[in-house]
Image (cartoon, rainbow, N blue to C red; front, side, top):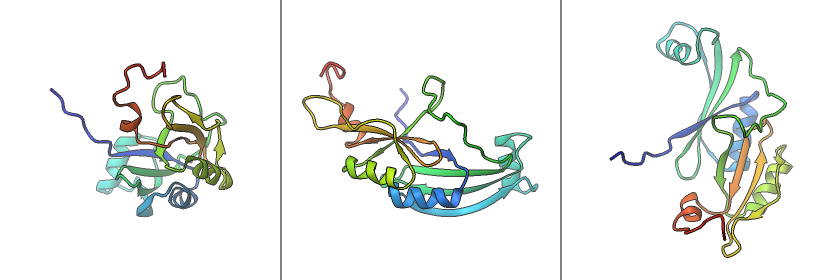
Length: 168
C-alpha cells in the first residue's frame, strides 16, 4: 500500500517576480522564504540542473520561494531567456494539467475584495457549496493570470464524510 504524500510546493510563472513576491506576501499572506535571485545557463552545477529541467532553449530565470501558513511552498519563476509572456486566456480549464491553486481564507469576502483591489480579478460570485453547511468558494485571478480558488474551509473539512456531496 502506498501511503499519502504531502504537497510540497506549486510553481507559478509570472512576468514580474518582484511585484509577484509583494502581491503573494501582502494579499495572499505568504511568508517569503527566499527573495528573488537569478539562475542562468552558466555551466555551474545549478545552471546545469535547470538547463536539464527546462531544455535546450533555457537561458535564464529569476526565482523566489514563499510559503503558505501550512507550509506548502509557492515557487515563483520569471523567465528571462526565453522571456516570460502572459497568454490572453489563462483559464483553459479543459486542457490537461493544473488549472488553479486553492487558498484557504477564513474571511473569503475580505480576501476576494483585497485581490480585486490589488490588481487581481474576481471570476465568480462567492458560492455556498452546500445548503446545510457554511462552506464558501469563489474563483479569482492574480494580476498575471494565475487562477486562485478561495475556500472558506480546509479541503479535508469540506470533502470528508460526505455521503452524496453533490446532492446536498
